[in-house]
Length: 235
Image 1: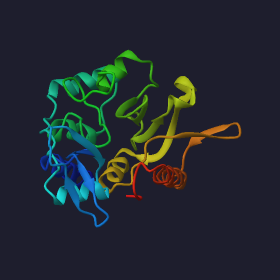
Image 2: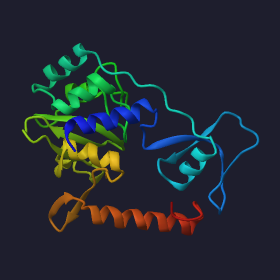
Image 3: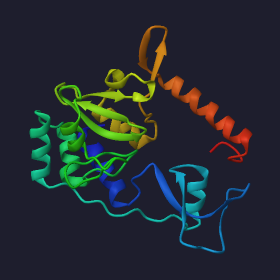
């Protein structure tokens, strides 16, 4: 996809208020026939379901999915401040997303610039760049939780993505290059094939997990959840 196509696809998801990987649905039960039975006593609480899961699609058919809040783009001054803090121009695609679509808040957890979406520690991408000694040129695009993050190398003409997975205990050595450009990263989010950064060890070598390793880990997790009774069957 070209940048214009990626931008338009993200803008459409944001305009439809269907822009997160997790959705809020009215509490209920998914029947074996795939019907979402809404709890009769609606106390206003909501449950979170993965976008595209059987539960989400059934709740959507039943009119039990809450639309997400509207998102607003960033101010030009906020984007210019981000570039001053970084010391590089932001990738044109990311810059246009901030200015024309949304100041973060969509996808897995895309971070914003000043006034925009924050991580679980109430930090924008600007705050992270300003307050932490990240490698030169790297810009935090997305927070995945547990301090795991996706970065783009703004000093690289190809805008290569990097992962950061400090759950390995490697501290600032937990950065690793990924075989993705920024545009490909957004494409994967749009088509539902994006994986969070995962640093694994092969002997003495640390590397990013492959798509096959991600798929195997996901299948193992689903099998465990079914066996434990957390879910009736795989989504």
